[in-house]
Image (tube, rainbow, N blue to C red):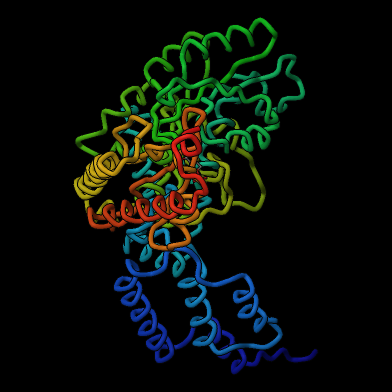
Length: 494
Ligand SMILES: *Cc1c(COP(=O)(O)O)cnc(C)c1O
């Protein structure tokens, strides 16, 4: 028999290569500290659009063939350089863009701690403390929405799309007989879902993932305020029933992505009841308003829903990859998601193993990204931030109107769509703004017209930043007016 030997020198080297020892760690943390300080001092003055061309990114990446090893200092410095120069800075106070927040330091700390311990939240028994923290957050938010503390449930997801997908699976399970067992193969009628034409079109992908296909999604017309038109909804429902379809789900959007419109939730609840539809509310961004003492009532009606989606990685400052699905009755979750395997620890029916009640299997501890700031700031801290951003939105609306921009959407929420008073070309003006590279905003379609879209997204934004945004817009417009060949009313107004 040969004696087995294991080279302990090599094992020590392996460990130190993956988790450096104290002296090297101290250097890394010193470096990271300087990175964070530099970041917080410079974030307002960074050029908002990427400074690096694709060729420059390629050049840096060409040094990485992964055959040889590289000093950590070189790799870290390359990556940080690419992050500073090679992205749109969504955490800048000058970012008035999509629902991509500035992240709290607590959220970043949460990511680090989670990475360090790497708890596995698939089963309760592997990470009871973490599963209970997430459950507490889900229950807290569900109760803010008015769900019963005894039955509320749900899970952290990777984002709004996964949370909405969870909702569709629950809806199919509840309303389409035999779905969890047999899928759609045995259905004589085709299940269809109702959302507004201004809702988030991740729903199309979700319909596909659930085996329904894109055209099972009925895009119901919106009214002039961007809210689902109830008369149209009733008409489409009746028509579908007459034509042999099986309506099973109604989704209200609370805070449309283009214009912050909130569907008439209470009226939708009545329709859902009348037609026996599963009622979900997609409040991915604006669901955060539940934490606001002043504005939570904007979501009145949410208590009538079977479930809702809230992204902590939008208005609640969590790093990317933090959505939440919250349902009124957690009993909904076990039928579609429960499976048994030989290799997983025995299912814990009392504490509800997350992998048996949600889409994911292995599960990262993303809830910590919300737990830390919520525990440290309290609801009041978030309420203050949200109410301030709503007020800043009002300030922006006023400033726009004083500067010959016309606000076209009506909402309390800080998403503002507008056009130039003389209908100057949106694309041309926007191109000038983005080329000047001081602020970031986008365009969208609202009420069938191309318009500018701004959102107060960063907790760092203050009135001076809004003033900069107005200046950037005014300058871009003057440039476009000046370069127009015949800048008379007839070409500008169309
Ligand atoms: C952002 C958003 C989504 C998609 O969420 P992700 O987190 O990007 O997956 C869905 N619905 C609404 C209303 C949204 O604003």
